[in-house]
Image 1: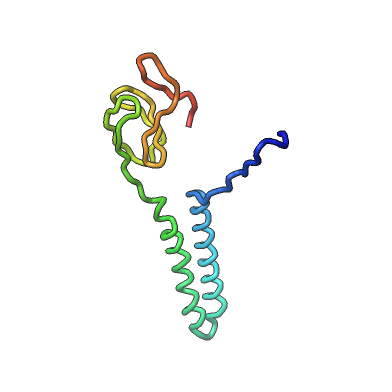
Image 2: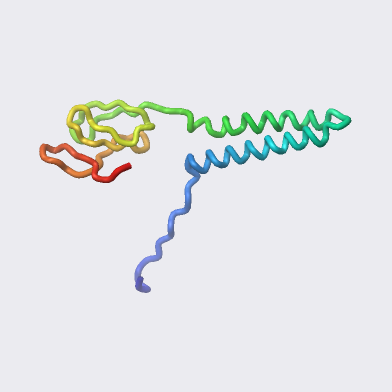
Length: 131
């Protein structure tokens, strides 16, 4: 790299679904273990341990479910085929599909139907890289 080339910064990591899943599980585990420890250690002769421990136990079970609610949701993706303009309807969980009309391989990204692969005779496309 010469001194005249512009310096480009590497993009940082984003907080995607794998990180949010791990973060939600970690928070739930910390809350649950904290509630368990408080319930077992402070509830000897008083109810203070149960007053603080039981809500922490419940929070440790409920908070991860609330944090991960976006992962459990699926939505439909509809649009025209990028090759032949035929209507396609699929789920956002689909990574790739084959158009029922032209047999072209269509990629689903961010709720949009995109072209992928290499051109075949007749205009159809086939994906050469595996997902």
